[in-house]
Image 1: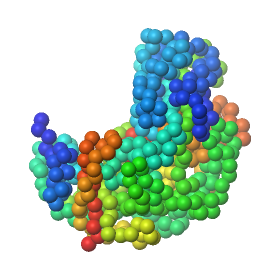
Image 2: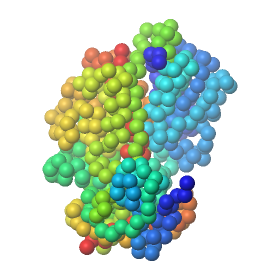
Image 3: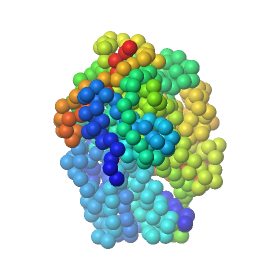
Image 4: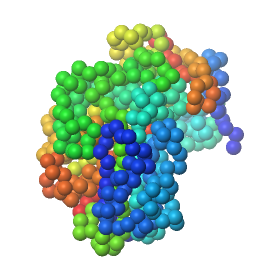
Length: 133
Length: 388
């Protein structure tokens, strides 16, 4: 079957300032990031949809011991989007070197950061970022 | 389906090793083979858990090398099994199925890992490869980071202050270190205090160094046989009463990660097959890769209500002598966590506990024990119930 939205197409969307996902014609749920079928009902009758790119932080951490290729400290969070799905992203605009206040429940807007290719990444990556509103 | 018994177990000391992964596994496996009163040539198949051998030693396809090292027959298939930190438990469950089905009578399973060879930055990176590389890896997520997010969500969801939760999480580490002192194969055999944990450096806020298991080298192995063969080989068979394995998608799809749904599904399978409930388990080795991980696992397995696991630790209900002793071996926290071997090391402890061979850390009168192993993005969970 034709892949509804590949990770490369999703990345290109983020780079163009758009958060793309799937809307299920069966159950109406949104699936972000994309996969081959609806994340809620498994249905394959889906269409590519643009989401609002707005959500709320549900939980977060400040990474102080980083994997090879990353420079600590930085913030990783899970946010619940207005349309329902949760998304992982880096919270920008705060100073993680100092104590970070509890940002749970804060409203955020989705952005992106291009990650240059390195070992074992299969090329360039695009990471979701969250900016506090 | 036939009944399947464990006839022998073996394990190396966990910590930092100069031995290769093949050598470590062979050490553990030969101990298990000797204990089983068989010879390597009697083994009909090997399932070997290994997570990151390629990165650790530049070694792929390690299973046939282990089989050859041990002197297993050429017509015995040897297969590497990878389920991140749950690799060895996936291997044991597969081995169980092959014997239960009647296809083989004697199968070797286990795992090996040499994580310290990578150093912390590469180990942190390669462990994080167990998350979704396209949609999480580029955010620099780490496993301490994933469980840090669990801890914060848990505190908010159940209305426990983060300060109180951290104190109870520290008590998990204190308990497991106390148990580790009584385990000669444990990586850490030193008691710590709540202050040790709370004064250690922050790895991924709110998790501190002593909330985290270490990087480790080590191996463990288990020989399984059909009931009929087992009765010929040993007078102390330990039976596999139930198995479960479940799978789930990445963290962001799981949403509320205070409940690890793959664990709930896997445990339900194991309890159903065994015809048992959480109240029937006398001793449990569960996946305490982080202190908060032990708390959520103790709830997911049904020992405590959701939101009550941290309180149970504070009351001593999970200590040896408590209502449900958890991780008498010291757990991943103190015993160590050579990822591909961990599930087999949990099986080693439960088998020894049920045979009454655990000395100072023995859970008195234990007849039914359970293992719980978690792999990757909370994506693979294996539960196995053993009994005598």
